[in-house]
Structure formats: C-alpha cells, structure tokens
Amino acid sequence: MEKVRLSDLESRMGPADVKRPLSPALGAEHVSLNYYELAPGETFGLGYHRHSDQEELFYVQSGTATFETEDGDVTVAAGEAVRFAPGEWQLGRNAGEERVVALALGAPQTTGDTEMHRDCPECEERTRHSIELAGDRDALLTVCTTCGTETGRYT
Image (cartoon, rainbow, N blue to C red; front, side, top):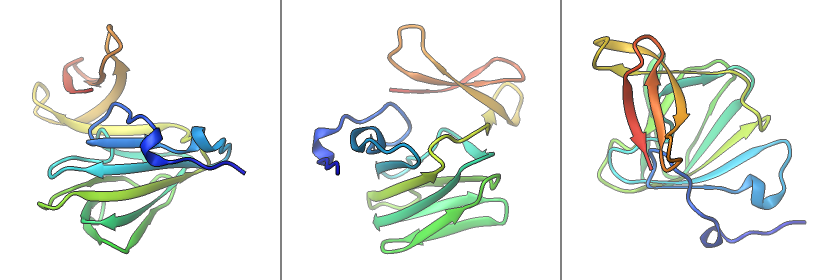
C-alpha cells in the first residue's frame, strides 16, 4: 500500500494553476491520476487534443468545468464526472468565476499518440501543435507544426 498527501507533491508546469501528479508518488503502473486546480480561464490541457490509446475521466470536486468536444461544449459541475474514450477530442477549461478542483484519471497510464490542435496566429486557424521543453528547461512550449510559431509558454 502507498499513501500520499497532496500538499507534499510539487505542482507541474502547465496551463493549470495547480497540477499534482499522484501516480508516481503512489507507485501506480497502469493508471495516471492527476489533481488539478484551475483558476478562471485556465485549462486542464495545453490544447484541444485526443489520446489514441488512453481513456480519460474527470471528476469535478468543486466549481464547474466546461469541456470542448466534437459535439459542442459539455458542462461538468461539482459532484459530476465525464469520460472520454480513446480517440475522442476534448479540452476542459474553467469558464466560470469560481476555482475548479478536479481529479483526472487516465488508463492505461501511457497515452499512446496524442494529437493536439491550437489556434495559430500566424496560420490564422487551428493547427496541429507539438509540446517542447524550453531550452533553459523552465517552461513547456506549444509550437505550431505547420509554421513553427510558438503559441504558448507555460511555467
């Protein structure tokens, strides 16, 4: 058995105010578990994305998360959960004024190929993007694979 206290875990770089990965601390080998806190306007992911091999579940503990999907926006309130099958497009965000606290669960732990799209000001449309580590390793970068424009920097 493994036990961990959230406050003992460091937050990871990304678009969320707080992202604490629980899986490594718990020694989980087959499932990914992350704790999130989103301030208004923040997102769970770096862009609209899908995982080829991983299903993802989000449980909202407080606040309301809004997920962009192929079928339109889906609102998930406190006490509710949502599941995305492998290959389903999604991006969750805090579109409200109240902080969102949520858990994200992914299985298997590895995502397989992840395809991500973001708005590119240079291309003037939503394009495929990659994630890179900044040269000084202090930020995650989102980069348009069409034109090479950096569209996001997350510390």
